[in-house]
Length: 409
Image (cartoon, rainbow, N blue to C red; front, side, top):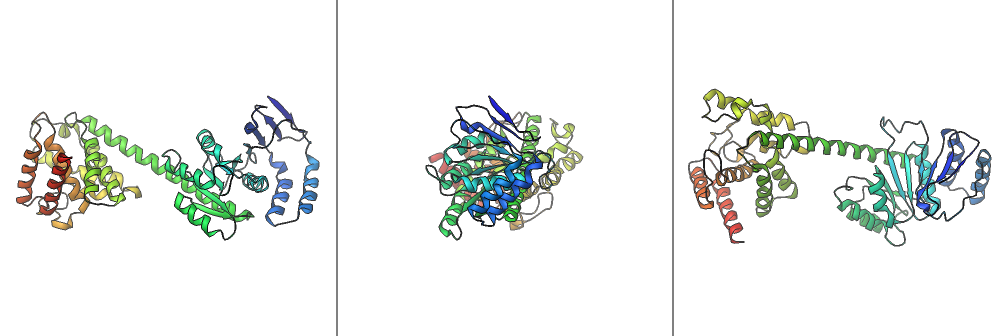
C-alpha cells in the first residue's frame, strides 16, 4: 500500500493496490471545499477552459502536488466532506455511485455531491457497475447513457431486474432534449433524468428526493417482512394446518392468473395467503388451540381475529389491497358471515376469490379431526355451500372449472 499526506489536515490519497487502479480512494476535508466548489461551479456555469485552469491554479495553492505512478484511467474513489450532515440524514451519509466515461462531467458530479456531504463512488464504465453495486450497496446511481461496451440502458435493465438492486434509484445523465434516450430510459426503469451541464441546485434536489424515497421503500420492505414473519409464526403455533399458507400463496397465484386478474390483484391474493389469519396473534391459545368444540363465547373471541389483523396491517399503504381479504374472508354470500354480515357483491371480490381457495385447501388437507377429501369430494361440499347461499355461485363454477383444468394439465 502506498499513501501520501498533504501538509493540510483532512487530505489523504491512498492507493490500496498499485496493480488495480479501481481501488483509488480519496477523502477531502471540509476546509478544502471552498476551492473545489469554485471549480465545480465554474464548470456548471460553462466557463472557458482558461478560466477553469486559472481557478484550478488558485485553488491548488493549498494542495501538495502528487506524482501518481501507474494507470489512473479509472476510477473508483470516495469523496466526502467530513463531519457534514447530509440534507437531514442522521445516519451514515448516503452513497452515490457516479458512472460516466467522460472524466470532466464525472468529476463535476463527484465534486458537487461531495460538497453536499454524500459519499461518492466513481466508475468509468458500465461493465464494472453491477459488481460495484453488489460490493458498495449505493443508495443512488447517477448513470451516463452513452458509454463504450455496456451502455447505461443495459446497466439499468440488469439492476432493475435483480430483486437485490431493483430499489436503488437510477438517474440517467442525458444530453439536452434527447427524447429518444429518455423514452428508452423509462422503458428500462430509470427513476429520473438530468441533463449536462449539471445545475447544482437541481442535482442536489433530485438526489436528495430519490435517496429519501429509497430509504422509505426499504423501511416499508422491512415492515412487510416483519408482518410475513409474524404470520408464519402464527401458523407454526397451530400444528394442525401444516403448510397451509404456502399452499394458499401458490393456489392464489394460479387461480388469479386463470381469472385474468391484474398483477397487483394477484400480488394481493398471494399476500393474503400469508396474512389472512395474522390477527390470530391476538387470540389466546386456550381458544386458538382448543381441541373440543368452541363455545359461543370462544367463537366470539375467535371472530375478532379478522379485526385484529386489519388493525395490524392498516398502517402500511402497500397492504390496502390485502386488508379487504383479511377482514372479509369469512363473509357469506347470503349475509350470514362475519364481521360485517356483508351480502352478495358487497363482499370485496378478492375476499370472495380468496375464501374459495382457503376452503378448498382446508377440505383437501388432512387434519387431526378429519381425513383429506378428494378433489371431487371437496368440490361437492363447496357446491352445496354455494347452493345454500354461502358462496358466489358464478365464482364457484369458475373455481370448479379451474380445478378440473389443473387436473387435466
